[in-house]
Image 1 (cartoon, rainbow, N blue to C red):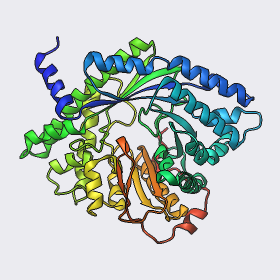
Image 2 (image 1 turned 120 degrees about the horizontal axis):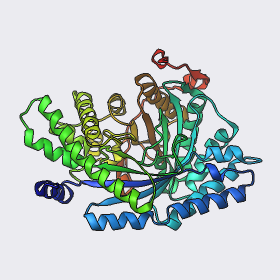
Image 3 (image 1 turned 180 degrees about the vertical axis):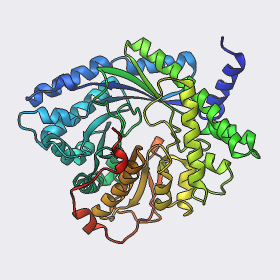
Image 4 (image 1 turned 90 degrees about the vertical axis):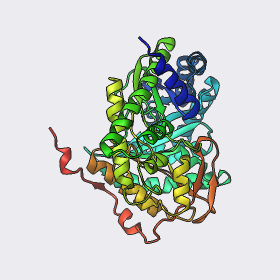
Length: 455
């Protein structure tokens, strides 16, 4: 039986504490669209997406109206497109971009916010199609509005593909230059992963994994503001009480997300996949992971103790989530995207938060270096080295890590880049100027760590 107090509590979370469902994401398999002729492939891709997702936005809006729960984004993820490129008779970068433009057109037809899956999984080595797709990423992202891309360059079982890491530094630089007029915006739609997950509903890294079915509904919830408000009630308590408070709050957030996911699944006639309970912040005041850490007693996010506070938060969120649902998945934990978090933006502007401190924090958070703006003249090799460092953290710790970094053309340390909307404001952060070029030029593969041998 529904407790009236729980209804009032949820209403307060939505009205006053920025609780929302961040995304309903429909995963669609494009395996049946593979073929040799690019025109036929694009036709099949467009038809399949527009058929399966035709009611996605309407259903999301109907649920939002009926239950009074804000649903911020409706999105689509698809099978890594590199598989389609591989199947073409004569694959080229131009043909890969044609598929990207088809995805963009289909996404606009059904009215979603983003479509993810212009992706390649190259943690051990490349296929020809994967190499071609990666080469095409800058043009694909620059010539589309809604398409998001990701590349998985490492895993605990395979090690790190350093040839792909080197290439991704060049890809990020080129993507930034091709969208110079929007301050390198294409890079905000590109994620480089280690240990990428197959059911992530959040952009820009979402793709419909190889182990997934024909079609699925995944939901991503969010609520940093709710967690902060809960911690305000236990100001003088010890960390055991803090962890228990976060856990109970995450439980409530996840239950709401599962309700929306199951309702969307039923109305669309598509299987329910997972609830991702990641605390995804926004630039809105109060909706910040940094503010949660500061509520624990830190003067500023980035102060000594920040990594420990984030570790507690991430673990308690996961524990609360698995209590609430048997189908928690995706990334599930705490995100630390600098430009999307009001508290992170403030800490970065004041110098309390550096890339080095963020890297330490990624050892215990759910993703990695996210939405970080760096000087536009940063060399590609330095970007590759940042990716390599982050991939190494993921590989050794058997966790997902990622890099979404934006070398803003013409910008230097101390400047500010305005992206608007959920992408927020990016203060240009300094990077070390010592060269990593010789290190990155070695190429090859960093072997998998000893802990990969678990059989």
